[in-house]
Image (cartoon, rainbow, N blue to C red; front, side, top):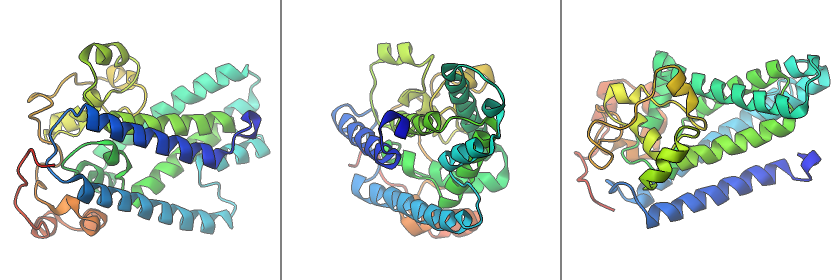
Length: 291
């Protein structure tokens, strides 16, 4: 990001914190749904998963960096440029066209990766940690198992390498996608008129919330993170949940007890069978409407 006079790490962290804080404030002012569980317990678990993910990524990055493997999307962009590898390093196009194409392609890759995590059993075992959350709010956007985060990083890095995408647009894209995830997971009551205006372009909270329904048909829909066009294009778009946003049940149908609210339960979840996971649930269903 030197081209823009911005420190990449500081920009990403600062933008993440700013959007996260904004979503927390907006959720408190205009909540869409009543919470089933305490914020403190859920947020501690979800933030704990995020921290464990970053610790895992840091360790893997340190090891692979010594093997000259460009693990992150940004490193992949820099590496491709140094090698002269990738589509945009072979073609001479205006920078704005390269940026526009790179953004669209990378967003489609994220959509396709998300679709794959629902269709490939081994990936679903990881991704269901995200879906096990009983409430959906901005903290759900950071609730991804460390191994799924690593998988996602490699997918993005590979896409960036083949594109030969400019490092600046890669950083901008990742910032936009992170902000979009915080926004569309937010427990935010967006005015219906505003939702109708922006939904044809970007994924709104009401659109993505459908994806977190216990109804399998609704879960297998609305995979988009930033742009909403891919779901419409590939026939995976559902406008509204059958039960409405206030009455729909969030999470996984077989795991509606307290287990997903615990850190170690969530970390172990991909590696245990259904019966074992259900046995470690500690309490029966939590009553709706608690805060």
